[in-house]
Image (cartoon, rainbow, N blue to C red; front, side, top):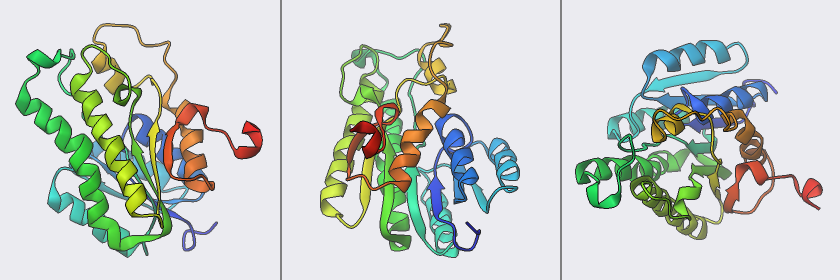
Length: 237
């Protein structure tokens, strides 16, 4: 697949963890990439690495910043439109995780701004550049559907993102909207959720990538999926 005809994906939060693993997988499959992250140095290093495989545009910044989202939209237009947007950037909240009655409300507001408002705002910014049947993946969590002590801030923000995604799917049947639980992963964010604990038994983020790739390249209906349980229809039969 040539760079001129390759599919184009915008991935937020792409400098580490799941976003980085997905970017590497898509680069190897010929996708052109627009990558976002707050860590500019890490993002630029990633862009240099992946530019040997595909066309990469790295735009460091914060997805809660309207000017940054406009820069992403400008890149999407210059790329000829998007085949996919993966809203992966997220905020955990305080570490260690506080119970809700002790949760600092200003921090909770920032968690919601990052995990709920920013994904929708990013979609609004690039809506004119989404190709027909473009894939939209909003990365969520099992904490959106299960009640875990200490996870009220993060979990409720992901629950809001899931409902937002479900309504988006109903309102935009021409798009493929997916809200995806990647499962527990051995990432910096997960370590911050469990400070001082050994999380080496968690799978690496690469274990969740095949399910995301299947949603991006397959023919699945809109809906909620668990990435590590996702199989091609022939495999699931």
